Image (cartoon, rainbow, N blue to C red; front, side):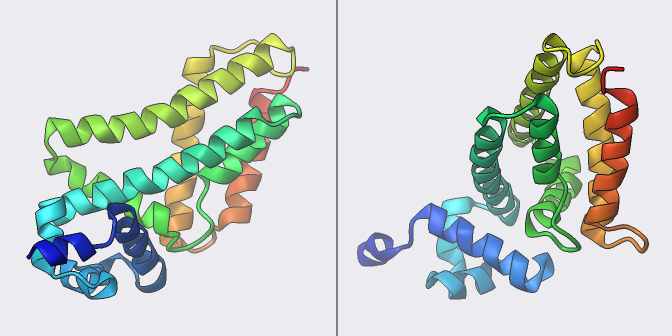
Length: 198
C-alpha cells in the first residue's frame, strides 16, 4: 500500500489526464475507473484523493482555470491598446468549438452546482471572480485612457460576460448556425457600438 502511494502520479498529472480524456472522448466517458486505468491507479485510490467525481471535476476545472488565468494575465499585461487586449480576453473566453474540453467541464460543474455545498460554490465563485476582476480593470483602463466611452466598468463587465457566456454555451454545445467565428463577430459588433469612444 505504501509503495502504491509512493508511485501514484502527482495530482496535476491526474487532472491533466482527466482534461485530456474529456477532450478526446467526451465527459460521458470520464469515469473514475477509466481515469484510473489511464493513470495507473485504482478507482478506489482516486476516490481516496478526490472523495467524489464532483470533487474531481471541480479540481480539474480549477487546474484548467489556473492555466487559463496565467494565459489571461500574459495577454492583459502585454503592450498594445486596451481594445486589442480586450479582443484577446474575448478570444480566450470563447470556446475553440463544439465540445471544447474546458467549456464541457464548466457546463458539467455548473449543472452539478445546483446540489453543491457552500465551499464548492465559493470555489466556483472564485473562478468567476478572477475573470470579472481582470475584465473590470481592463475596461477601467480603457476608459481612463479615452479609448472607451465612460462606462461603469463593473456593470459593463457583468453584461459583457453574460453575452460571452450565452454565446459560448451555443458554441460549446454545437448549436446549429453558431460557431466561434460568428460568436466573436457578434461580440466585436457589440463592443464597437457600446464601448468605443466616438
